[in-house]
Amino acid sequence: MTSVLLRDSLGDWTDFDVAGYRLGEFLGVIPPERSFDSVKGFFWIDGFPLGIMLDEMLESMVKAGFLEKNDDLQYRWNPAQPDIGQPLDEEPLPPLT
Image 1 (cartoon, rainbow, N blue to C red):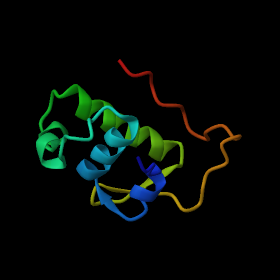
Image 2 (cartoon, rainbow, N blue to C red; image 1 turned 30 degrees about the vertical axis):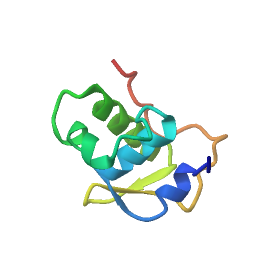
Image 3 (cartoon, helix red, strand yellow; image 1 turned 45 degrees about the vertical axis):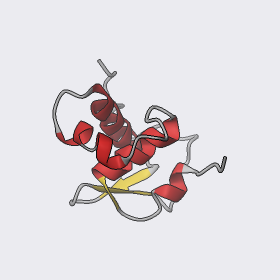
């Protein structure tokens, strides 16, 4: 089995649903046999816990500086890695409920 780093699969601007799918694959919460088309609705329709969780994780990664997000709701790995030893300048994200 080949290991793919998330930073490699999000190296270019990627639509939010595909970015969520790739994050889900990376975390192992989307089984490898599930295609993107079979879970795409989880990101577009309100109420799917998996889509909500992955969207919140992507947003947390933006806030932490690991991902960038553009106005077209696309994500990519931030080529200028954040200093993980520095606290956020902003208020931390509220706890997930």
